[in-house]
Amino acid sequence: MRSLSSAGLAATILIGLAVCAAPAAAKSVKVSNKNDSGPNTFRAAVAKANADPAIDRIEFRPGKKLIRLETPVVYTGAQALTIDGRGAVITENGADDILVANGGGDLHLENIAFVEALQSGVVVNVPGGDTVREQTVSLDNVVLEGNGYYGLHFDDQSGGDGTGSDSASSLRLIVNNSRVTHNNNPAIEPAAADKDGIRVDEGGEGDVTAVVSLSIFQENSGDGLEIDEIGEGDVAVSVRKSSFSDNGSQPQDTSDLEDGLDVDEAGGGDVWVTIVRTVINGNQDEGLDLDEADEGGIYLTTVKMEASGNLDENVKLTQTQDDSASEGGIVARISRSIVNDSIDGDGIKLESFDNADDEGLVGTVFASFQNSEAIGNDSDDIQIEAASGELVIRASTVGEIDLSPGITLTELP
Image (cartoon, rainbow, N blue to C red; front, side):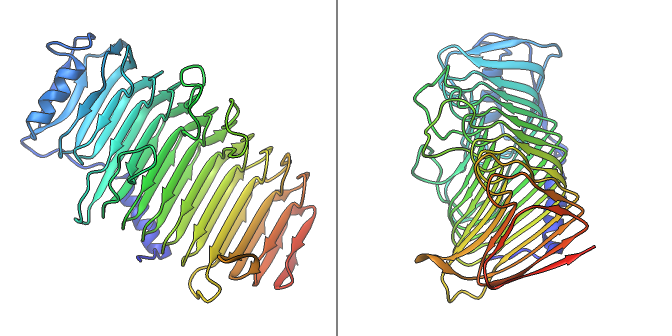
């Protein structure tokens, strides 16, 4: 297991913001034909990139154009590829998925929309292997809207509904100035369930890093953004100036309601999440849901976050581990944030349980609530269940508080 220190997390996020420079010998291909196939089409450009590893950029002719695909366009290259749509909108005319990438090359999408696919807008399947590497998918000014399944599925898990591989790769997702809305669209695929706006599935050894900025995740039938990490490895998420609102509002399985932002980590590894100037409102289960199973901790920092009006908890952090495990805990630092008016749950719920016994409290929780507000929630405004820990409230407005016996409360002006 590779635990991230605070310095390590910061370095990871800074690396995540970098864009690899093109090699000197790189080539680009132009797209000027909006047909499904033929010379100078999107399909032809990707086929050229598949055949020539020196091609690292596909660029559309400027001007918004609609492209309807009869079958998916499949990228099989191992080189990093940038696709700049220059305002192009790509949809299907019989295709299930719109763009599928299988070759392991980093994929950078810019100024392009993938809309109303029968299944997913973009699917990136991570190839198998024991080589330790990192694969990146980045979106910059991208629209993923109204697709029947996922807007984007970045998949390294075998089984389930994907074709991932449980490889040793780490996954890096960058979403900037993008819109992810109305995916898992029941008007297109009414029987589909639990497909998210963006889903990242990591299997085997490897970490997940996600950096989200200036982006909207709204009215997806599944989660707005879900990250599922099942092997040895950490999850590090940084969100800034974004929104996760009204996800799960369309028809879905009532036994599995959906969150705004959902992170599930199983196996050895930590969850590190930083949320700044972000709104997480009106989702059909939790607004922010962080779960960690096995050894490892959850570390949450929020600054100027609003998480209000969600159906269940506005913010929920759950740790389950063996009672003998000494690693991990929950640390939540909530600053200048609003966590009000949950419909049927707590404002903030922090809990640490024994894997074998949901009633057995384990772990340590430290929570600070500073210059913030938690009122009007349906149940408790702050609830903490763990073997030991402390809640510090400073210069804040808080209603009902429920602490298990091992948690001390310190209130400061």
